[in-house]
Length: 105
Image (cartoon, helix red, strand yellow):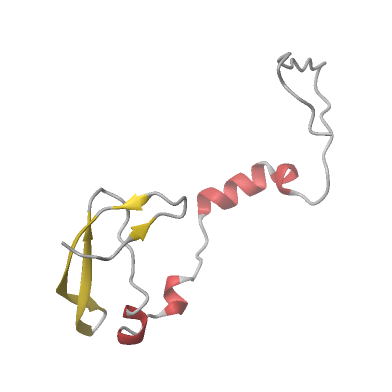
């Protein structure tokens, strides 16, 4: 059992089962780095200390490519994504509020 304590961004404790050395490969780099094994099925996380050992290609990690589906949506519904405030021009609207709701103003 490990004495390492991990928490989520909401403060929930993540149960650490243990720590071991593992073979890590990124591109043509191969390193033996510490792996932390935890309870649960959350996403795999990259330990900060790894950044000293593995040279990441940030250009490809943060690159964006054209997505034809998104371009189609932007073209079809461009007014939704335009600058400034819009105005609802449809029919009448009735907003119901619970009697227990309080005003923010």
